Image 1 (cartoon, rainbow, N blue to C red):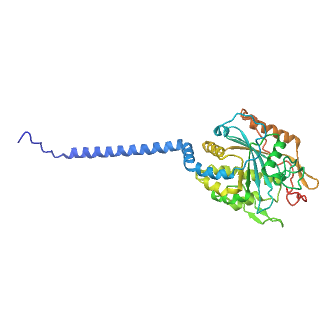
Image 2: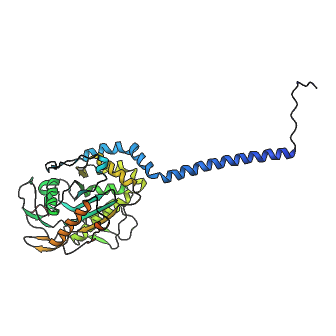
Image 3: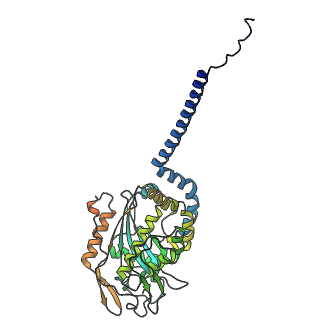
Length: 379
């Protein structure tokens, strides 16, 4: 045989073929282990960095769309005449400092004069993930502060008249005078816009343990069944509108609803619905918070591991009869509340400083049927 001729390949023995097949299976198994490892690493990384991924998605997919809609809800009020002189902070810095928001819930229908059914002075502490809700009963007898935009106003009457007299501006001025603290921001929400928002979120959980029936002759009739796992938009709207018990219980329902909506918003699927939800809210939402501030705050909430820790208190007092039924605030409780708000607004306050007596009721506040003073648009 020619030495330069390549040798013919030998036939593999059965043992050699078995070893080669075993090696191929081993390599294939190792490849699958590598793939499985990569999948596990990606999955684990996605879980560990899920908040960062959510924020990235918020920035890239939602922020621009949401910003345009939020800009349309921006409605400033005259707050620049308070002196100020404070150091300018960036939006990111501002959204981490304690701030106050006056939440005004209205139930305006058609072209009627709007009244505030829900008045809540809130303090938000983003760094601590804490929120304080101070409910002011709508029948509270207080001094009106500010410039009214309509005729026939009173100098002292129910606090819910402030919005009818002079809109958000007069409500802010009146609450600031009552609580002796500034209102950094306000937000008005027309309850009529709640139904579609709740439905878009897949409903809301509400702790209803007894049947709720609106059945007085001059009220819209409805029934809400108890112990349901989830309630739709119509039921939620009726829940916050129901007024045939006391003003205290109604205000407490408003606070419960706000808490449950916050819990619902923490769901990932609802975060993806933010543009739709804000679009639905539309003209039913007005605020002097800029879109940049709200978006920065939203990211802070998303990055939080838990739902905000909410403390609540309702101003105490008792019902009194003058020309109509009013709610006379208790001076001692009012001062204690003012002191507590001051601590919540202080960024250096400790957890012990922020302890709040979660009081829901301190007296009887009469229902609409009993408390309609003639000629007062604020009822």
